[in-house]
Image 1 (cartoon, one colour):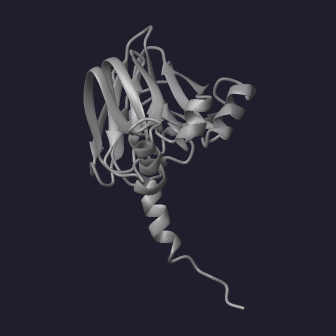
Image 2 (image 1 turned 30 degrees about the vertical axis):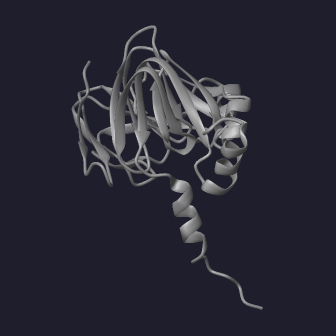
Amino acid sequence: MKYKYTIEHSPAYADIRMNLAANQSITVEAGAMAAMDTNITMTSKMRGGILKSVGRMLGGESLFLSEFTAQNKPGEILISPGVPGDVCHYHLEAGRSLFLQSSGFVACDPRIELDTKFQGFKGFFSGESLFLVKASGNGDIWFSSYGAIVEIPVNGSYLVDTGYVVAFEDSLNYNVELLGGLSRKGLKTALFGGDGLVCRFSGQGRLWIQTRHIGPLVNFLHAFRPVKSD
């Protein structure tokens, strides 16, 4: 059954207004439900079992997901991501997967399987999360970002700063590397220029990036934090 939805207030403060048919369900990231009709019920679960749920926790995700169902008649639910920015819809075909940044998942068809993929040294050296969310199955999925989302069709090779990657199709391969390589110039750029570590995507498929990096915002706000005086 197709979902009827509208993405509102994009790209700065996007949310999803979802109109569920009678007895239709949607899986939502814990805490993302902003408002809903009273005939919609909620159940919480540790998606994928204890071990996979612990992996999500280590990757910065919630242990729990919420499933909302419109009981006996249609109902509306408003879904709001935790970070101000954009929301994008993607339809997964059977046998394919989509990789998301660990905090990017918002909602999906309950038939979609969400798993945590360890990035190993790729994630360690990039300074980003050690985990990606792997979504597979057949159905609809929605993901979010900090800032607007830009879709990029890759056919060959493409470079993206590690802090701007939102999602990519499983037809793309990637490696984390220094911009400029391991040369003296590349190391100098990484240490002093602020633009050092990038993901090199190769193959053919779609990639989504965000127009803002939350790191500089955190650094900016840090100067205004309350400080206890002696």
